[in-house]
Image 1 (cartoon, rainbow, N blue to C red):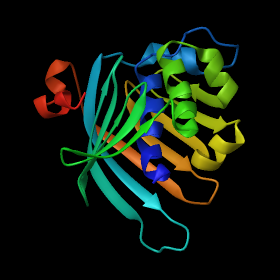
Image 2 (image 1 turned 90 degrees about the horizontal axis):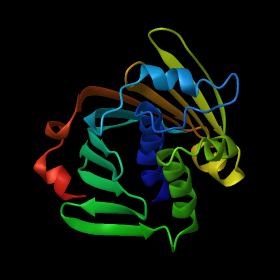
Image 3 (image 1 turned 60 degrees about the horizontal axis):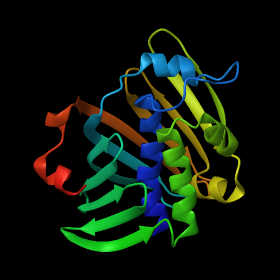
Length: 209
């Protein structure tokens, strides 16, 4: 069940980089400041995701797609439409899994240590605490005039076991994420149809916040 919830966590991490929410102060050689200057910084960002998960021992990958929305200061909505509809909402204090309009599961940071760890990383980014990012991840990457690439490797053993190594690339927005888990499983997420501003999010999606 937890692995299901890690996909939007990865998304949220990458989009916080894309939204420029990380502090521009960084050590020499850190690619984040250059990437930050390249990326757009909308308050609301929505789009389509296509996810492919390759599982060890399975010949065919698992395919899914849907919509995501990121609202600065509020959180992330991750809505899988195919093959089965479900919705995840991540905020500062909790992760909520919806089935239709019904809350199927709620994990609160004050009760679940894993949620607390995840939210610590996510919201340190929101507050511009780059030291937290560097404490939790080894950051490697590069940027040129038109594109960038970043790799995040978790330092914490429990986090590394859960999410492995995350590779991101893009330009004005994140285009691709690849997560290589310690188990050998691999997840690729492609983002497209990006829209920004208040009109990007539907009334139904806004209501879930």
